[in-house]
Image (cartoon, rainbow, N blue to C red; front, side, top):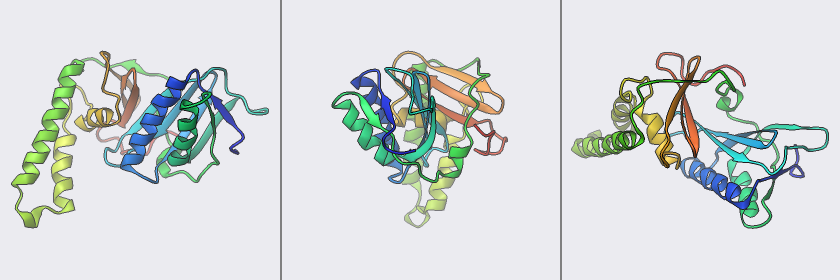
Length: 227
């Protein structure tokens, strides 16, 4: 894959929204990589913000089906920072972004959630309630950290408190609160639609602005079926 490959976004807004997502990923990991998959007129971008232990998925509409020479699909892992530069240029000009050179991806990039077989899961609270749960969890985390004596405010203790709070499930679902927290931090927890889906061992929280996917508790973290 060379930078001569191009993605033609449906409009500058699609590129701008994707650029915002990439910038949020880089905020949590300046050396972040993303896996790009384009087929037909849809681009899917996968990333993993390290603080949340989820996979983030953002799609963008393309003006025309992807093609580059004889290739009619794209599947490559690239630097998020380099891709952001190209997408940012596309947002401010003609909506066309170059695809960066491929990089050696992190382990998660080789194993993604399944492409199909998703079905709705019941019992997810409404969007405002989920936002409220995230806000309450953030408040609790800050309060509990402030209560710790100075000598105990070490990374291991903060991680312990965080795991206890963020591993709680939302309502009667199996979805951990950290998935909703990640969705909010990445700019997904907006609009008025929120859906919980499942496929095999995976859960996926989806909004109109993007999705986060996690493994169900006890299914082995992010070691998953190859995409």
